[in-house]
Image 1 (spheres, one colour):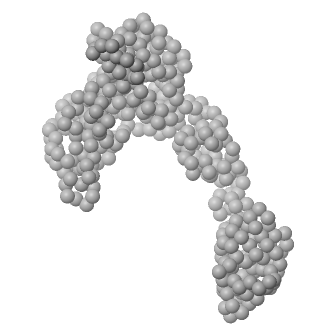
Image 2 (spheres, one colour; image 1 turned 180 degrees about the vertical axis):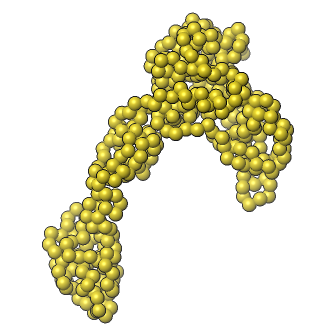
Image 3 (cartoon, rainbow, N blue to C red; image 1 turned 90 degrees about the horizontal axis):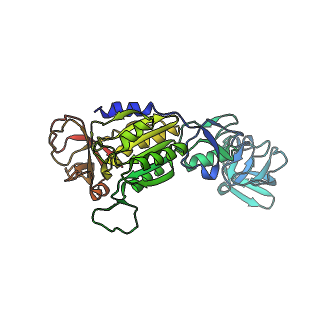
Length: 405
């Protein structure tokens, strides 16, 4: 067995970044930028009014007593309909938010500080050059790099790209994932079960959802019984259409565990098999040509933890993101824990509110049972307590690392 950290390092060596593709803005949310994005225009392209009011020369307000200066209104500037002339001494232009500031004007007096009488307006503000004016290029200027490669696109980024003049973005292609659940006992969810020896395939949909939420594209999801030849055919088909091929189950050393020998027979160079972790020890992975093959254990919690720690960062890295091994954050422990054994233990646990009488900080309590077959425990938990190999006992109130999921 190898340590979790070493296994993760070896897995990341399998990564060959995916190519890019153009994506319309409305579909780019959650994708990863493949290149820096530069502004094609300045925003705003010219000085704009930040308020409704009157555009004037600030020097016309100098030395005048408040409310004693009257201006002649010579026109109007609205958003999309600018005033074409120039503001001269003693003149004002009625202006609205977002409208171009007329030539000659350098101050906007807000309408609350103005008294209008026909074509005359009396202004009660003092001189304040550039007051209430959004300067040209105040948001960004043409040629500025506004978005950076590797960023996961958010709605706000889409808005920024649109303002910069882009109708589409170069994004990294989604990682194509094929998922194969193995075992004679499995029945697809929703179908009828005819024997107490059968169970529903729960790990397959769960892992597919975990990776799909992270941006991967599940291009194939199959079930194969305990048949080595059928498994080899399915793996071969999956390898032709996916960047990552996942198997769930059949990863150990029993007579019905065919994943390891089949992958070897197919020429997959297995870099790791058996990791010093609990749950998830039988996990394996390797590469053939351009495809990464990953064998996950069959128990639901084992499959989930392995996918969370290894496969989701793998797909994220393929798609251009910087992904690291999840290690969690320090959280106080709500109960005592005994010493840990030789494998790093990822304990399903719940966050509870302030059981230690502190200042509102949460604490974490492990589930009473850590059986890796229990989906109810997994679903009722908020995350995983990380217990390093051979860790000594810890007492209530001490901090442990916690990975939320």
